[in-house]
Image (cartoon, rainbow, N blue to C red):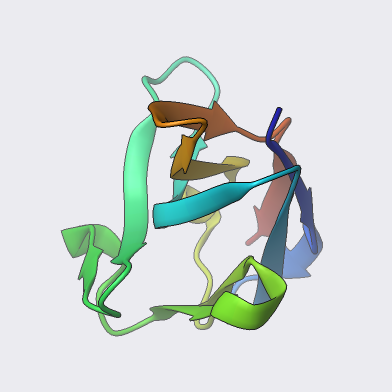
Length: 119
């Protein structure tokens, strides 16, 4: 079983910076892609950024130029550097990974880490 553990959320003022991290753990798995999603109160979960196995990345329009996703393959981690944060970035941020384990494709979610941006 593959598990994801997020860290790095918190309270920050508008214009501030936060860095989220997510580490994948388990036995005998390989990661296809990892990413970050978020869900604000009363809204649907939305994709923030993903990074593929080849290092290519995709961002939501709302975070382009402000957020940067990166990964460390050796440590099975993905990070999200968030700068120039805005109150509308306030949400529960979830780590997501597409992994292959025992010849099966699995989609795994973390428990979420809360980001609150005050105006």
